[in-house]
Length: 546
Image (cartoon, rainbow, N blue to C red; front, side, top):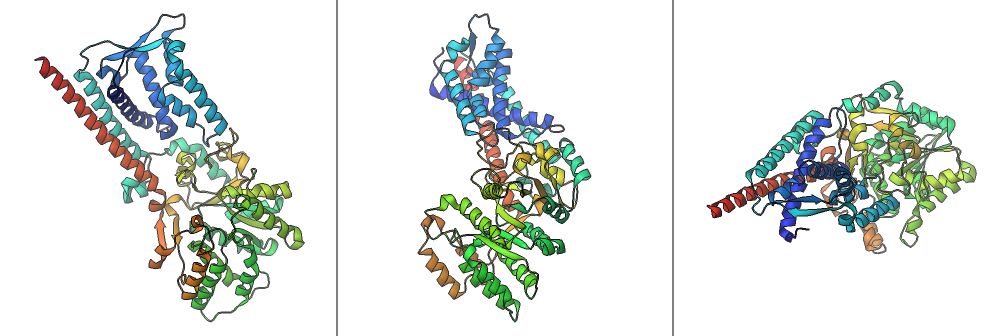
């Protein structure tokens, strides 16, 4: 095997990695009309294919050709193409990463098994496949490799620009091009669009229909501070049908011991809105659970709106807080079972027959260890759970299903409808709304009864803070609580002294996209620099010969 210096191996790897990156951009554009090629794990797959094609056709990669090395294949009854394919699809660096991370969500036992198999094959790959590196040319460098590399850079940049202009949300593209990235085309999302057109239901009608079959319906909340979802929730719980036949809302947020205090607040008449907000802000200081202070505007606004709806009504909507005050956090690992038990005991007391239950993210799952699981175990067949369209909070706010759902729903306005997952292309999609899973092959219809689409991502926004947080008596309560909580529970709140802090969808969902675009610009500039170094190296070598 040819001995290469570390910096030579590094140069080869960098040229091949960046060349594969630009080839990926071209491939993504060519496939865009019919299929969206996600960057992960698509890039790792393209890089592996790049090695296979390079070795099968030329016996060397672009990076290796620059340094005059390539592969030498031993004689064997097994065709060289087969050995190259197995070697690069199992033991190359991109292949190892691909097989380790390709499952979404990651299934630990599967990823670990794939990693062990690939690493074992890597250790013995020279003997297994009879392929090794060999120096073919003692003075290798030629301008051809530089031209090919430069062409790939320019083609990749052009392909990405065209792909973004073809597939990106036109409103976002016009407002902030730097917050956009390629996503599925409308044509590739057609099966979702067709299903929505034929099967969408009014949100309130859909939830009330579920209550004909189930006693308890869990709503899987978006990220906690997102505002528009609580407009939808308020419209639902104040629907006359809900008021007359359901009347109970359990919430993950809020201390169970504060239920009576909120009822007394609702009973109290205030002379004006200011007095209500001051008293509600004071109540918020006492109605805490895990964190130092729950600052989300939507929660304050929801309780305020429910005050006005319930005050002086006989048939009230009962807001049932379900968590505890976690001053002692020694049992925090059992929080889901505790919240579940609080809800279950209230239901079993006989005062509740049907309820809407608002839980965030995984707490709404019916799988083991989550609130939904404990509820479904206690009331088998009587619990439905419904997802609200959302970016993935664990996967850095990236869209579910690589954006197919967002593209589809944006074609049908207003984005205010719901439907079951069963017998739908949405339900058949692999479940990617989590980072880790114990099982593979899970689909959305295995995890949720149905989904609500309410407002596209471009219409969503988050807000923190509410009026009168920093009244002297409230500051005193916050400081007292801060002295009792562990350090990790003291979420920051001082930034709210400047007022309510609102972030629109571009700021909320665009963080990762902006980071990705900055990284891509860095890759482009680095690749151009690398290409310049290649040109200089060849020129210098030829000058020395002359």
